[in-house]
Every structure is written in structure tokens, then in C-alpha cells.
Amino acid sequence: MDQIFVLLQHWLVAFLPLSLQPVASVLLAVVAIVCVFPALFALTTVFERKGLARIQNRIGPNRVGPFGIMQPIADGIKSLTKEDIVPSIANAPVHFLAPVVLVVAVFMGFAVLPMGRNMVLVDMDAGLLFYFAMGASTEVSVFMAGWSSRNKYSLLGAMRAVAQMISYEVVLLLSSVSVVMIAGSLSLTKIVAAQSGYTGIFPHWYIFTPWGLVGFIMYAIAATAETNRSPFDLPEGESELVAGYHTEYSGFKFALFFLGEYLAMFSISGLGTTLFLGGWSAPFSFLTFIPSWIWFFSKLMMSIFVFIWMRGTLPRLRQDQLMNFAWKFVLPLTLLNLMVTALWRFMGEGWARWGVCSAILIAAYILMGRVGMYKEHFGPRRYRYAE
Image 1: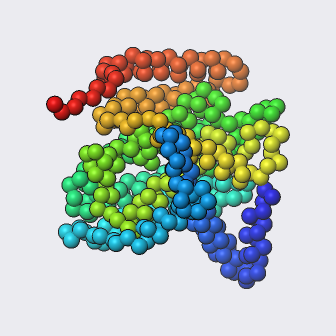
Image 2: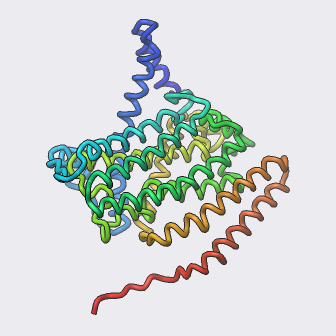
Image 3: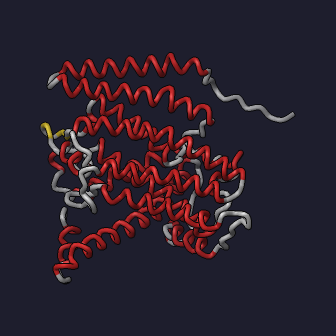
């Protein structure tokens, strides 16, 4: 069962001539990725609506199909049949290409994610570098959408989104560097292999180290901001920017932006699983008989659950709070974590490095979080109403 999809791929490819087998093998893997993750997107939209409804004491979708499970199909038909309106003064080619570039760039990131044992489309030595190169393309698509719309609200939303994404992408990159320092490779399959061992029944996941825990928290914060999820969903601040950079999009183009956002959430959750949570490895040594791809997708869906939970729980930040948090707290702590990672690497085995590294990180958190951020006067929110 662990290798069922790999064996099925080899069985199907064996019917073709030897010269066509490599191409057919890649095409089959691409088709699997293109089918699985949009299907996962459809299920997640129902899961999110039901979860938010539960948090907010509502019912949620319950009309289309049993328990509302067919709601994504109704949403897809609605998006396909709605009129595609393009502003007369918009740059039509760029306006059309923006959502396409977004979706293509996100799909390219899945190519290097190991989703199970021997289940990776392209196993390259610089897989992590390729992933971040593709991820940076999404910022271009966001700016293309805002600029081509010829709408000042769309442009402001795009500029705000790009500023946010660039600020937190620095944190995302640096939090991943600590994993590269310990694993000694940019290959995502080798990073998973470095975490595949066990001490007794417990795994050697990087999150179970002081630097790994802090790196994972910084990565999770940056990933939330990169995917424009609450409480970092400022690019879609409807109270001041209507809908942000995709204000002038409708119909299937808007659906592509919606799809791209969720695919990016899957992709960045899959990378976090690979870097800090052991990828497809089991959480305990006695559970290794369960197929590896089940563990990978279980961890990914648990991350999606946390995204949904935060959306229904936390209020949206202000723009100044968002940028201050990035540059005055998250980035300095991530830089310090790199030095702590180097210290962990060269101190050798033993409990001494656990104590030293933990003490440094806790002291830095208290100094920057409890003392430094007080100067920003982040008090309770005060609401003023018109007389």
C-alpha cells in the first residue's frame, strides 16, 4: 500500500515503448498533482465553511447534496457561468495573465515536494531553492492584477499585498535556512531522510529541538502572512479596499485567484511538513506500517485545520502592526535562531546544548516580545462611533 501509486505508475508506463516511458511517467505524475490538489481544494472549502459556521454558531452549507457536500460543484458552476467583466481601460492581456501566472507558479512548487516514499515529481538537489523561486513569482502575479486593472483601489491593494509578502518572505526563507544548516542539503527528500530516524519510539523531527520549534513558529507566522490568511488578510481588507488586488475580477478569473490562494496554502503547509515535521515519516516507530503518503496528507490537513481555526478566532491586524511585527520581532528572532542553530550544530551531543540554546531563545523572546514591543503602545482596541 505504501508504494501502490508508484507501482501503478510503473505498470501503466510499461505498456508504452521504452523511448516514451520517461515522458509518460512525468505526465502521469503531473496529472495526479493537477487532479488531487484541486479536489482537495473543493473539499477544504466545505470543511472551512462548516468549521467557521461551527465557531460562529451557524449551520453552514446544508442545501446542495447531503450535508452540503456538493457545495463546491455549485460554486464552480456559478463561477463558470458568471459574466467575465473587464474594465474598458484595463490592460487586457496582463489582466488575463495575472491569475494564470499565479496558479501555474503555485503548481510548479508541488513538483519538488516529496508526498510519500519515492513519491516526488522532480527530485533535484536544489529543490528548496526551486520552490522559493517559484513562490516569488506569485508576488509578480499579484502586482500584475492590481496594475492592469487601472483601478486605484486594486493598485493600492496590490502594493499592500506585495509589501506584506516581501516582508514575510524574508522570514520564510531564513527560517528554512536553519533546516538546511542541520540537514546539509537543499534537497527536500534528503531533508526528510535526515528526520526519518527514531530514538525508541520517538522521531527525530526538527520541531522537537529548541531551534526547530522556534523556526517552525516563525515559519508558520510567515506562511500565514504569505497566503494572506487571517489575521494577516490585509490585502483583502473589504472595509477600505473593496476586495484588494482582485477587485476588478469576476467569473472564472476570480475563481482562479481563489483556487491559487488555497493551493498556495496546501503548498506552503506541505513544505512546512517536509522541513520541520518529518515529511512523510510516521510520528512513532510502531506506526511505520501505515503508508507514508497517508502521514504526509494527514499532517498537511492538520495544518489546514489550524489555518481555518485562526481565521475564525483572530481579528485582522492593522497595517502598521503587521509591518512592525515582521521587522521588529519576527525577523530579528529568526536571525538569532540561525546563530542558535549553528551553536547547536557545533556544541555536539549532550544536554548542555539543549539548555544553552533554549535559554538564549527564551531570553530573546522576553526581551523583544515583552519589553521591546511595549514601546509600540499596542493596547486594547478602542472603537469610536460617529455622534
